[in-house]
Every structure is written in C-alpha cells, then in structure tokens.
Image (cartoon, rainbow, N blue to C red; front, side, top):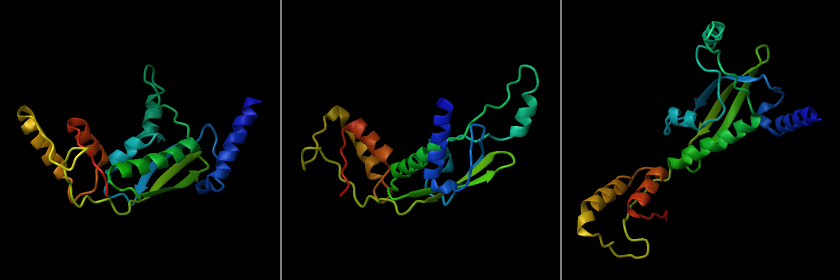
Length: 191
C-alpha cells in the first residue's frame, strides 16, 4: 500500500514539474552534474552552498574503485528529489535577494542520461537589476534627530556608521544591513 502511494506521489510530482517533460526518475536516479548559466553578481560558491540537491561529486569512478578496497568507504548515494529541486530554486532566489537582486529569476534545465539513470541539471539565472542604495541616513528608529551616543561608545558608533555608509551606491546586502542593525540598533527602510 505504501509503495503504491510513493509511486503515485512521484508520478504526480513529475507531472506537476514542467521542466521534466518525459523524464522518468526513480529511487536510484542521481545527479551527475550541476551547472549555472547567467551567473554574475553572486559567486557560484555561494549558490552551490544554498543547494540541497547533491551531485555525485568529482572522481566518482575512482571513488567507486577505491571503495572496493577493505576499510575504504565507497561514495555515498545521493538520490534525486524533484521536490528538493523546486526548493533549491526558491533557495537560489533567496540567495540573490540577500545580495540585493530581488527580481532575480531562476529556472532549470534537466538532461537525463537514461542508460546510466543520471541527470545533468543546469540552473538558468537572470539576476535582473539590483536594488541600489541611493543614499544612507543613520538616525534613531523613533526620531529624525541625531542619535545621542555616549562618549565611551562614540568610536564604535563612528565605525558602524562608516560601515553602513559604504553601502551607498551599491546593491543592498541584506545580511550586512542586518548585521549593522544587530551591532548598533541601526534601522533601515527602503524608500
């Protein structure tokens, strides 16, 4: 009973995923390679770290051969999940948004090597235009006046202010803005 539900879920998921078309996957399907096209502003290393879909890795054949030796583990099996691929698209969009590219579009193309039951996934990224900070104003969250800073914290505050102002004219980096908020109670609003 459970097996038929699992097969039905896979079939439904494949039908609901237009990029797969006629690609049929099963529990033994793995990803051979993951590539990115159109990537510019966000480093590929950052994008790869956001993915949960895993590929077989480099030197797979060598690792299989070495895994036949005693006490040497073979490569781990990384079954492909269409649902995880959909979640990866969302994670990649979030990675771009965190770098100020809120309109980034991420799609994917999948090629299936039926003889080996392997997939090659290419993420197609159109990053769009970033949200550029035209100006930065540092002020108290509840006032339009300068924030009173105690003398013993003035150097720290000046350093924080300088760090925040460095973003002016550059894409909004959400993590950096949050860090400034945590370190010095700096609020920010996009106008």
